[in-house]
Amino acid sequence: MAKLIDRKLIAEETMAFLFEKPEGFEFRAGQFCLLSLPDIGFQDERGLRKPLSIASSPLDNELMFVAKMSESAFKRTLREMPAGTAVTIDGPHGSFTLPEDTSVPVIFIAGGIAIIPFRSMVRHVAGARTEHTITLFYSSRTPQEAAFLKELQDIAETHRNIRLVATMTRVSEQSKTWSGLTGRINPAIISDGCKEWRDAVYYVAGSSGMVDGIRDMLAGMEIKAERIRKEKFTGY
Image (cartoon, rainbow, N blue to C red; front, side, top):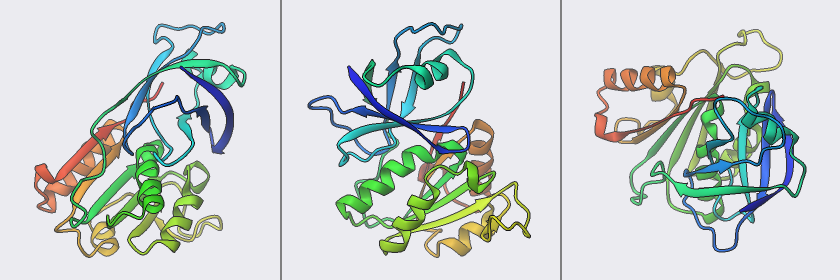
């Protein structure tokens, strides 16, 4: 069990939820938990149990989970339950975690809300000062929807082994709110953003369509399937 400490809006329609870390709870950056919420009056056929990636680093004192909000019973309960509410946390689970071999360059490709496990991993690499070399490609529709964008920019600016390449798919090149890259992640963005792209291992997370599209793109770049790890996000 873990108690809710606080919640906050961190991007457009996206909220972060801070929980007490249960005593003895250990996890690897990139893993997820199954959260079971109490019934406070919201019910639907999808229930009150859902997997959520851990957004915090193993070095952090609290557990953070992040959700793009909707009107599902699970999300409404998260949004409305008071601080101090206890939830059941089953986990951690998953192997979408950093490679043990720090000599191999790592490329993260995140679409939208699937930035969550990468935030955990990047924050851990920065905090623990591991020798991983990471290039994070982050695609969002707009800067306002890009959770953790400023934090990730700051980390990349202060850690020589972490790079961030962000691109927005629903802003024009003349936009006054975004002066960076626009459009979907493509081979040119990958090769321009990471000179070690041919030798890297790839971690891809996003919607089912996004992950399948990136997989096909990487295959066209002659990246072998065994060098690609994938995690698909489905929201409700």
